[in-house]
Image (cartoon, rainbow, N blue to C red):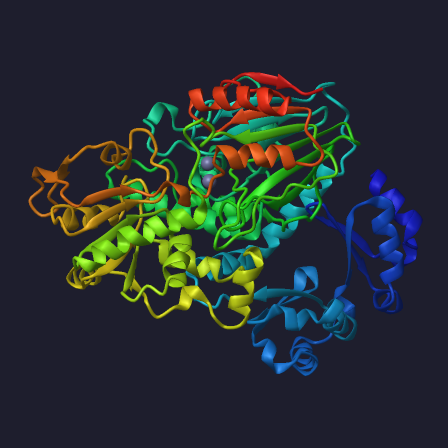
Length: 623
Ligand SMILES: [Zn+2]
Ligand SMILES: [Zn+2]
C-alpha cells in the first residue's frame, strides 16, 4: 500500500511492529520502549507530510499490569476529575477512563493524558459521565465495548478500503437526488466521484404514506454494495430514519456522524419503532437494524478532518440546528471539487446553540434547505417570539389552565425548557415521552452547546437537572399531571402522529381553559397540521371500549413559529451571502416544491449566484 510505503520513509521501520487502521486513522503499534516515550516529533512530522491522523500505541508486552495501571492513573489524576470507572480494551492497548470532568483527565495541553500514556504504556480514551443518567448513552457505550472484536476488524477493513489504490471508474462528479428534492422528508443524495460513491443522509418521510416514505433507491445508480460511506447530518428521522432499513437490507459499510448524533439517532429510532408498534403499523425497521447501525457507526467531532473514501475527505461543522447537527463539507479528489451540505441549519443564535458555521477554505457547490424559503417565511425576531410564547403561557396560567406543547423529543423541547427557565417560570413543567431521555443525552455533551450554556453547566447550573422539571413515566403520573393546575406538559410526538401527546390531547382538548401550542413544523398529512389549519372535530378511538368518537377541540390553538430550529428566509439569504468563499452554485432542496423554486430564484436575483431547485432523481453534474 502506497500510504504504508510513505509512512516507513518517515518512521524507522524497525520500531514499527504492526500497522492497523481504525477508519481513516493509522495506528502504529510499537514494542520499542524508547520510541513509545519519545515519538512526538517524528509523528508530528509524519502527520504534516502525509495529512493523515496517526496514533502510536504500545504492543501487549509493553503494557503495565491492569491493577497497577488503575493505581497509577488515580495517582496521576486529580481527585476532582471524578473518575467513576476505568476499563481496558486489551485488543487495542486502550484504557478507557470514565470521568465527570474529562478536561481534568486530559490536563493543560494534554499533559496529564501524556503522562498516563508514558508511564503505563496504555493509550487513554476519556469518556464523560452524563450529569443526568442516560440509558441510551450508557447502553450504546456498553454495547460497543461488547462488540470490540467486531469493531476492530470492521474499522481495519474500512481503513484498507479508504487507502486502497482504486482506479478511477468515472471521470465526473455528480449528485443524484434520491429524496428531499422539492419536498421535506426522506432527505438523501447519492454522490458519485471518480473513485467513490457516498450517500449523504438517509432519511424517511414521517407522515407520508408507505409508497413514498423511503428515498428512491430502486434506481440503477444506487446499489448499497457499491456505497463507500453514508454521512449523516443530524439525528432527525427525515435525515437518518432510513439507515436501519439500509442495514437490514444488507449494507455493511460505515456511517459517519457526530457523537451526539449517534446517540440521538438511536433514541429516535427506538422511539419510532415504539410509536409504529403502538399505532398498529408494521415497523419499517426493527431493533436488529438499529443494533447493526450502531455497530457500524464512526463518530467524528466538528472540524476533525477524515478520509472516508479513496478520493473523499469529510469535515463536520456546527449547523446550529439541533445538538450535534453538522454541516457536511466534502473535499473531493486533490482539490477537484468541494461540496458544502448545509441542511438542516440555523443561522441565528438560540438558547442552546451557536449559529451555523460560515468560514471554509473552499466551497464550489452549496446545497441548502428551503424549509422556510418563501416570501411569507420571515420570522419575527427571536426576543419577540419568546415574549409571545410566554404571553400565551402566562394567560393560560392565569385562568388555571394547562398548556400542552407537542414537541419533538430532541432540541425543541430542550429549547422550550431553556426559555421557560430563563423566564423563571414558577409552575411545574411535566415532561412526557422520550424528551427525558433526550435531556440525558444533552447533558452528556456540554461541549456541543454555545459558550453561555457551557459556562452555566460547568458552574453546576445544569438546566436539565432543574427541580421544576417533572418526569411522566407512567399512566398514573399522567393522571397526576392533569390534576396539577396550572402547569405545562411537553410531550412527544411533535406532529401529533402518535405517542403520549395523544392521551394528553384527548384529556385536555375539551376544556376551554387549556392551550395547545405548536412550536415546530407540522408535516403535510399529519394530525398536527390538520388541527393547525382549523380542524376542530377529530375522530378518536376510545382506548377502553375501542369505539370511535369525535373529540371537540375547545382549547385554544396557537402556533409560535419563530422558535424554529431552521433558518427563515432572511437567515438563509444572510447565510449564503456571508459564506466564505462565495460558492459558484447553489442547489436548493428540503422545501415544498413552490418554496424551493422560489428560493432558488431569489438567490439568483439577489445574490447573483447560479441556483437551481432540482426534482428527485435529477442528476446534477458538478465536474
Ligand atoms: Zn432537522
Ligand atoms: Zn430536515
